[in-house]
Image (cartoon, rainbow, N blue to C red):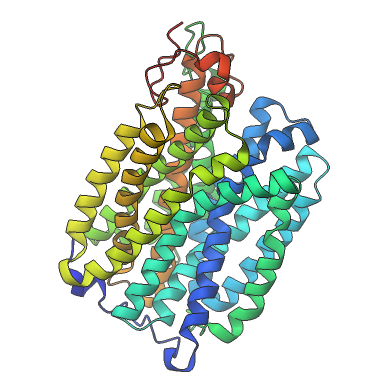
Length: 473
């Protein structure tokens, strides 16, 4: 990877659209970080409330999954369009519009009284998140001067990006326990209003770049990802040994995904107003950062999903206790994100990316050995802290590498691809891991992966929660 100077180097006309000296940088950082935290934590804050949502609205086990998937797919699938919207229309304007849309969708979700209403609100939340996330990251590049101020801002942004997942679990536990599942949606409304009101004062706007929206690319890309995730999530082998890879709906979904994604690449190659200009991948370091983020997203989403099911259904933790158990991880991630921000100018990104990857992988392996007889300190806290240290070292350098040497016209695209990697990686990872685990647990019908970690089914499973070999007896 590149050294410290290229990472903090010129981002095209990255600061042309803003005058940092005339803006309150502290308030700007607070606005951007709060928006990013709100969008990211929404991917997990709802997870804790899923049993209550299921009881209230009558979701089936398989239908309940779409409360999560409706958000993740629209969020990940439309991030590229959201990034280009900021480049074409102006990032501050798009940022505020996305916050308002996200808050309105949250309000609708809180008042939902039917399954279709809630799923529609979740999909709309994903659209708002897809607009806000890339605009927030590109606003860091256009608001903060190069060097230490931008590195510090990137460190805070990176900490919010990863800590949001754990904070969502904590907030979801508190709100569900003491108020109602509806408040996991309502809580976004006052926060969104505050951010939207503060943004015009705190943030400078970027100069809009003439262009057109690549709707064919947006449609084929989003539908292609949705088809891929749907096909993978339905391709598990059932408990009786019957493989579903040959099922008509699975084959049709996967073939459709290949056709749609191939069409997307062809459209982007030929279009004069491409949603994802392929020139963005000419920088090898940037392409590597996107690939790493894809893998990190797969690991992170799977870790939180399975650990939450395990500690609640096997160890008997409540939703609130589960959230509190994640607190040390949040602290370590934020600490190491700050440390990495200080180290990048001295040693560059490569050593941090290598060390963070190795430490994170080691922590994940240790975490995979957890059993029903493990203690919190040795089975969860220790490996969780190691994993958090590695992840905290990764996110800030990855963010800087992804935005290094990017022209101002492509800043939104570069940032949205980073977020897309995380979301798409997570969706694909859960589709594979969740269905595989559900299918291989004896006595589990496969409709609700969460039941794979029920107390009765997990008794005697000494193989660790990430081994899909089912209970021993």
